[in-house]
Amino acid sequence: MKRRILPANNSFRLLLVSLLWFGAVPAWAMGVPVTLTSVRAVSWQTRLSYPGEIRSVGELSLTAPVTGRVVGPFPPAGHIRKGSIIARVRPAGLTAQLLAGRQEVAYARANLLRNQQLLRDGIISRAMEESSRLRSSQAEDNLRALEAQQSAGRLVAPFSGTIQYLIAPGGVVSAGTPIATLSGRGQPWAEALLPPEQARYLDNAAAVAIQGDGWKGSGTLRNIAERANRSGLLQVMVNLPADCPLLPGEWVTLHFSEKAVHSLAVPEDAVISRGAQEKIFVLHGHTAQAVAVTVLGSQKGLARIAGPIHIGEKVILRNNTRLRDDTQVVVQP
Image (cartoon, rainbow, N blue to C red):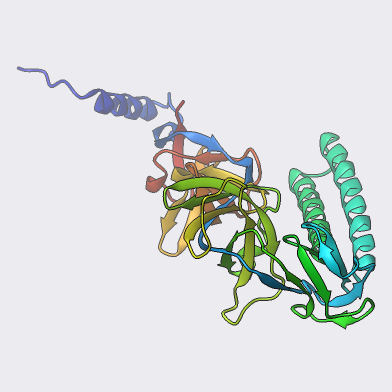
């Protein structure tokens, strides 16, 4: 009589069944074999690519970037150098908003430090500490937005030329109102049109990668218009490097970087899409529990997610498509 040799996998299962029958192996040992990963905190910076046109002007109308009061002192009319501040537009209430924003940041930071100590002492939960961290981050983001608004109120000569003023100091203007005209030969720049929800979150300090016909380089973000055009898009201007061979009228691809944000992330394979719902499975004891999440983006194999999860939580990575709520699992190395 020939003996039937079972495959290694079947032999292992037969062994487990036998042991379980005699009470030597707990029930969870018969679960689905899985491997784990952890929820991690990442600094996330999204890249955006848009077509841009190389442009230049001989005479430029300089308009108010924001609504507010025009304040001086104005440089004398006549020749003016590139980079000179022509005027400032101060939005109503901005000074008070900046003061309140700085106070909010100080309070949020103090609250975060206090909660971090309470977490170390075991008095509060990690969720409460992460909530205070989020409030502190939001307060800092709000303050940076106000400071950016203050900087956006400066009207700077983009090239050397002859200035002629159209508005006297002290006047109240709306965004887009012409304040002066600058005549001269301006340096070319790249111009793109972006949706407001993306243009307002661009990182002003990050270089803008430029890709033209047979040429690659990088520029700097010059200006983001405060007011949308008729299509609902914002004009974004990019300074070109001094050695750029591109000419007005040419089209390029501009690669922008959004401001970095702190987020939770897991490997993309840990996220399961079932219909319109996205979920991950977290390990609770020896069972899998489904948690609904929202995927905010993906990059380099990681999915940026939001949901009722926290840093360090154990997430099932392999065999997660076989799982349901309360499925017994066996963690493998």
